[in-house]
Image 1 (tube, rainbow, N blue to C red):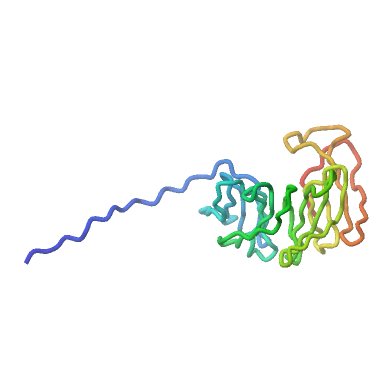
Image 2 (image 1 turned 180 degrees about the vertical axis):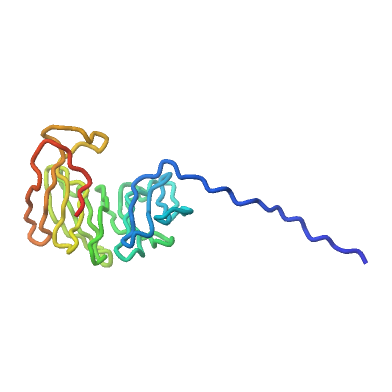
Length: 211
């Protein structure tokens, strides 16, 4: 009796790990165990201590500005996949993104509220002025927190969620050593009353404000 040889199967060795070059916009999860970042126009995730990175989004248009939710289960990001910058959320383990904004103005997410119910946006809607908004991720209702003729950059909630810190004016980050009247200054906003006050008042750049 002749024996039948098993079919030949081409086995390729797994590719050796390679460093990710050109990663940007890193965002750390609240527990410090994971990091999200932008690579080749998509959002990726990797262990903060190092390891294999995996894509969370895959789209021909640009996905950027990733932000972990406080519980680490979601990643908010802004994308041009709908034509201009809009805000989306996607499960941190991957899945179908959910769109949160549809406005023709550029919507950029900058932070979650401490309870994970709202996202803080900077945008320019129906006005020549700049504005900060808080959008409820469940109902998609947005609330204008402040409006200004000057750019309002990189807002962030306080740990209690009742205040917002942001940069007013400012040159782009490639000019961190700019010194002059247009330098970014730090302002504090009361999210409930809308009252604002400057925390710095000099000619130096103050970028990426955070509590």
